[in-house]
Figure 1: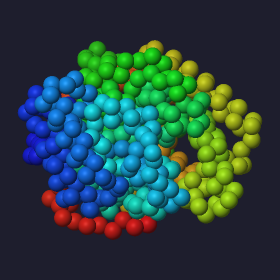
Figure 2 (figure 1 turned 180 degrees about the vertical axis):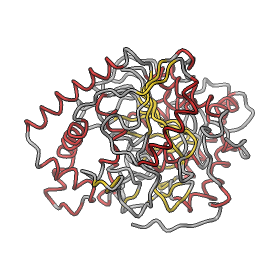
Figure 3 (figure 1 turned 60 degrees about the vertical axis):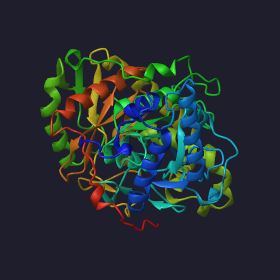
Length: 487
């Protein structure tokens, strides 16, 4: 990791400390971020709707609160990006869909309100695929978002805009969400940290299929410590979410101490079922050789995830059938190709498919919990391929084998989605094409604080090993560049 050269490059944790001690002002921090946004955002198209006047007003109010000696929230004065799937009062929210191209919500949704109440200065919406469908951040409203290490390649998705903004120092913290890997995949492709919490840890009042646990909201940061800071604002109890349980969000403010040398760790290249490119397998084996000595025990072992592909396809499709029926019935062309594919897949399924998927999901969860009786953590790659051109909507083949759906290449992450275990994407050097490599760190049921703590400990250990340290993009290749990301 390179030494920060500008204020916007400093970690969120350190920036929040400096604001609290009056070493820096929220106003000057915001201006530093705006300067970086103006310099590099045209090259990657990560931040979309912005209201800089409102952000500057919020920063001035944050500065006044510091000077008055007010009690300050955990994110006080930190410029923040909110994924464009989340409603923000007075700030355009499109969900990446032409149907909502001019939509301006009247109020914040629950998670956004919590982040704002914690003192965040909301600067912009971050780009996402249409309705968050797919891991390539591109939509017909704003176009695509390029990878910060090579804008011609994908940045992942669906929280791609957030990951790119963090990687390039445009903002110190951002929000994200995850169904099949949408927090973890863009984090892996962009060299930052994304954490998928246990269902209900971050309550949601927007999830229409409230009793389905596969979709969650969560934090993104350049490091696990920064993500933990955001998590402290997002997490909590709210009866609006049927999965929410009493929890102290502030318990996440500082990562839980974890001694890696006491841990029993399992690693797997493919979770026993996921297609993985041979070059990524080789890169992962190299990473394992470099880090396995950090642990008390580090052995190859794979939990039995059962019919993970079938389970995820059914559970995903059910949500799409519930959400998009009216628009599909009116005119399928109103929905993008990925959304239509999910919806039409659901039309072919039966109630028997649904009941079997839920039964298999429960069995897989219990088998993974039994697996965690022998191991403290499970490690595997986040993604099965290196970032490919953003003009390619999704991966169709891996190792010459045709994939079963447009999202089959996300199997390494959706396999964990199925079981509901907390998972963190940790930067782990680069792959065979010198693009960021992400390590998926999976913890036991409801072990969110432990998983984030382990991710933090891993990042600290990796920083001392050049082959594992977090990569950083070359800003000089992006400054002043304007790329065309129209789709």
